[in-house]
Image 1: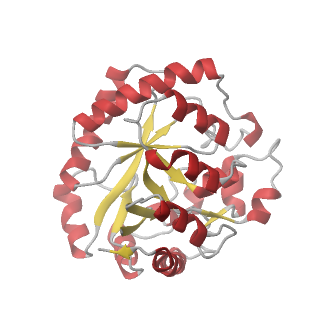
Image 2: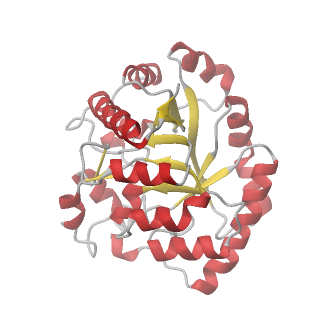
Length: 299
């Protein structure tokens, strides 16, 4: 089985928290990504959204685009509007040869609001999730038909955060809606990460290898502290620096035949946790667990 290792630029630049951003150029960020050993990078707000400009920089460091976030609004918007909104990114990703667009539902989310405690996240009933899941399926079918599939990102602070919420979305959506599995977000939300893999492995098309610091997560006052407060406190980190057993997680994914990208995404204070050092630590741990799980890491 083959796997590819990528990383998100969120360790260098946090789009929601300017104070958690390193003072480096795009060129320097990608140089460090390559130096740490990765072959792919997800896009961020500081990336040019065209291959004429980005392509030569990626080529310089032997990197490819391995995904990137799209702030979806399908919960409260119609499909035609979302098609128009995603089209520029879709065209860019097709030109880049990216594996997918990471769909994050941002309607009603509190993930970027420092004044909204974790406990105030939006909640949907099953009757509300059912039609949303149907619209997501239709939208995913259209995106795949255009040549660029989605991968749905369950996320802290969003309408699909917890394991039961994800179970309902998967139950009421069709197989055309793939899943991005993020162990860090699921563990933070109180879910059983191995059970999520067991239940939804057939839908997993993209993997974020985000670790958590369990003591930080367990020590949060969710009635008063926000998702961004948790990030500032150091809730997230790279594999090998946190509390999750990524050898077991990767072996479970390998057992179900997952092949594709494993992308490090670990937003934290770049002063206390220098991005290059953390990227190297995460890469070393992933190389170790990939070998233990029987993966061949390819560039």
